[in-house]
Image (cartoon, rainbow, N blue to C red; front, top):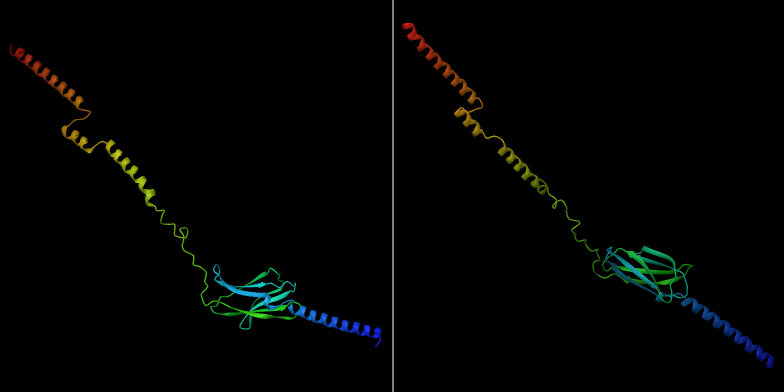
Amino acid sequence: MSISRRTSLMVRTAGVASAAAALALGVAGNAFACSITEFSPTISCDQQSGQGVITVVDQDSSGTKVDISVLQGGSTLATQSGVMGSKQGETFTFPVAWTQGATYTIHVVKSQGGQVGDKTVTAPNTACAAPTKSPTPSDSPTAAPTTAAPSTSPTAAPTTSAAAVADTSSPSPSGSTSLAETGGGSNTGMIAGIAGALVVVGGGGVFMLRRRTPATRH
């Protein structure tokens, strides 16, 4: 075999090997471009709402857009489409109704088509309920502190004292009764003057009669 034919055969063999290697690397690259192992789901209880929250961390750094769905018993509970992960990890949350011991399926597919895989997560066998609101002073009835008694009691005392003052300033019945019994009044002096005048007139008349009687006898 000549050198030229040997060289040509070697070049062909190298080309075929290179093509096969490139094809194998391409298939392998597509196979590991987005793997279900790069998705980490967890479930927790949201104490504020009393619901469950499924958190999925996507650490796929290939830039592949995927659709993530949460399923339970064949029913789709929540879906986020066209999301991408990163090497540091991107977090996606899905609120679900909390069921003790329930198992949820995390279904991941490529947005452009192609199956990625499934993972499951199980809720703890404990209750998840929102905390009950304790009564506060502002919630209690406010009618008790305000009563009508304090507002009416201060005005009762002045009214009673005013009545007492009015009673003491008015003339007492006992004084008027004693004046009637003793005959005292504003006309007592005038009556006494008239009586004195009558006595004088009467005395003068008697004196005149006595003087006339002896004169008549002579």
